[in-house]
Figure 1 (cartoon, rainbow, N blue to C red):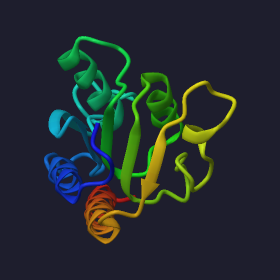
Figure 2: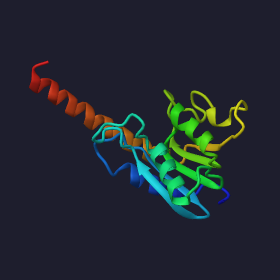
Figure 3: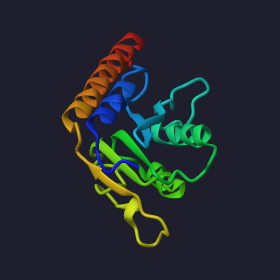
Length: 162
């Protein structure tokens, strides 16, 4: 396992987040022993729509498939947005060693913002987490996405006469 945060992997997660302009730009990369073993971006709006299509969950699944195991001990995740309760729970259940994130999520973040699910002593496994890495770049991606979405939604509203 690497010993801590590496900017190159967070940049890969930012690149992954930008791959689908129809999705909220969240990208995740999982690294083990200095090797990228999985990457994913949000796919919630895919066809068919998938409420579980969060970048973190997709990356965890791909990492497990790549390694042929369900416990991701020794792996680290780099993700562009602080994980939500569902994803933070999946991090704990996967046994992943660490999670580094870019932007904080004051509404749903469960790696320190709203709650620290990944470090709750009620669970037998804790995930080392740290955030704020390349935060401004991730926030800029998110802001641009939602500005475009609002413009598109307003245009559709005007065109439909609402």
